[in-house]
Image (cartoon, rainbow, N blue to C red):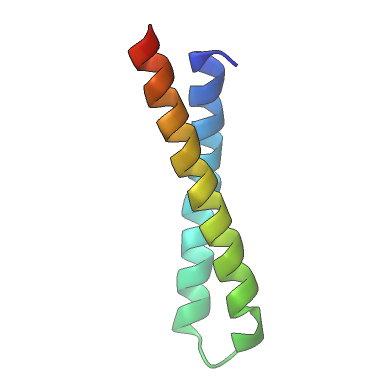
Length: 66
């Protein structure tokens, strides 16, 4: 994967991560309503941010190698 492709993937994932953060915030604001969804939304949000962090680290390594 090229640095440009990786940057594009990071941008798309960053957008999705921002939306998940807002969804989690909205869910938390409405507690105790829909508390059953809390763990699923939190787990998905965590997974997206973890992947985003990994991709950013990969991009940093690629940019240093150039």
